[in-house]
Image 1 (tube, rainbow, N blue to C red):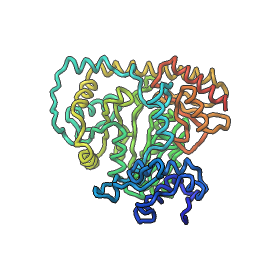
Image 2: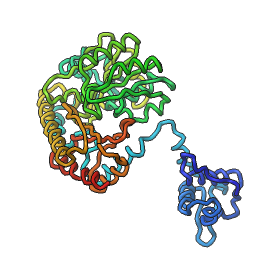
Image 3: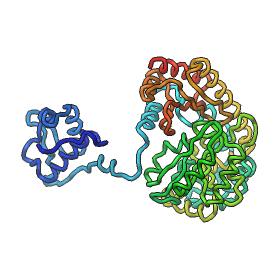
Image 4: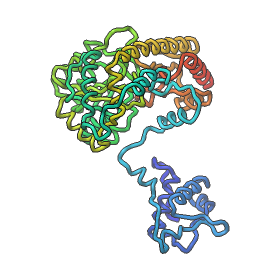
Length: 476
């Protein structure tokens, strides 16, 4: 056998072997009337583990290319060349060939563990169910009649809801806008996808924060976008770095999370915001402001948004109800210039023919009711208590082993581990002890950090989770 696996390639050896065998079946190297080489022979011939050969044959069998027969070895499936001439597609090839990239393996692992096992969840960026306004939402669905249409709605979203959102952002976020400048989306995530897909092209350079939730998203790489990074500390980004990056790379768009940033919890001050907007207007660079947390201030102060200070229309503003009401509602929105909103609306219609009318009705009634004010007040109070608990637990169990800044809003706390550790080993040890969180490297280029989210668990669980994490850290 002339073929040998490429041990330096990123593709797993069993996949390389499966691909070689599949090509050999197609071109006649392996004739249909003779058995394929045995697992033991291939392992010895190629100097690989037998389990690797077994995995390759498992893949070929799952795709309908081969069949295993006791006593007569492994043979090519008769269905490929027989009368039926039916063949199962090589789905793994299709999966690998797709242009839309999967989440990072660590991210996939965290989500899988959180769903399949009873873990203390300090990873998920959503509210716990006891923080959802269930009583208020049940009142809407049980006492008010649905008066909307169950057919396709306006491409930009229900006009009544867009009017309500315009009033909501004016009152709570000091943003002056009109319903025609608003697009309803399936959460902030879809808003980001629409912007990247519709307003940027392969090869464009954009700026992301480092660390940042956006760092964890494969949408930029899938679209062929070049990403450059602005470092974030407890005071946010340094706008001077932005100018330097633009001079070198001709930046096309800036993505920022100014209020209680995910994951650092930092808050950009007013002067920094003004400088960013000045740079944006001077060089004609759009800014995408992602604002899930500005209503969660623990100080009671109203946090100014970039969009509220934007006099030239340079900011595309994204927000949603996911982090302050309920993630399952899937209600988000983009505010921007009308031509941009119409372009994004056209793309959204191609994807899903517009947003679900029923959830838009619920969101509208809740946003315009006095219950929304009561809910936000109660939510902030509960989040502050959980923030205080995680700070207390970090100080008690980890003392001088970690460094962190206390966030004044939002749902995340960003910690630097002082000793040198293997992030994957620490995560595995933590999972064994029943607690999960997000390793810092999945959110940025720096190692030795972790993000704990305190919105998903109650105070007792937060304390127990930090105890288990400290045990995992001490074990290493």
